[in-house]
Picture 1 (cartoon, rainbow, N blue to C red):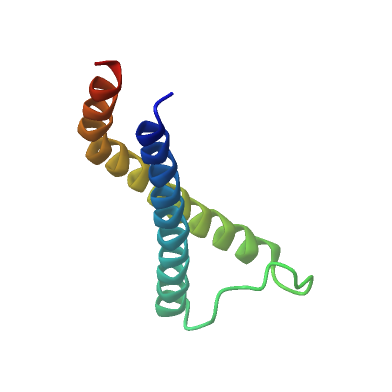
Picture 2 (cartoon, rainbow, N blue to C red; picture 1 turned 90 degrees about the vertical axis):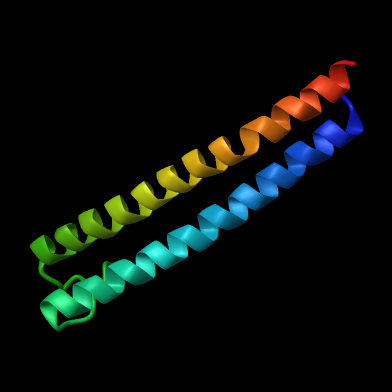
Length: 95
């Protein structure tokens, strides 16, 4: 495989990883803020056995869905943005 194509793949992986980490962090922070706004309490501590199980399950579901949805949307957006450049790099490699 051509070196520049491999370098481009590595750069893609690094950029996508950074986007997913940052996006997940921001989604979790947004979920924290929404929870506090709606309940006037901080999000439940998942490791605290005295927390109400229903509250912990609802929090886990809400934050998990928000983080998962954010990661999905970021992956799709990144793939759509990078696709034309990948095809150009592959065409250059095949020449």
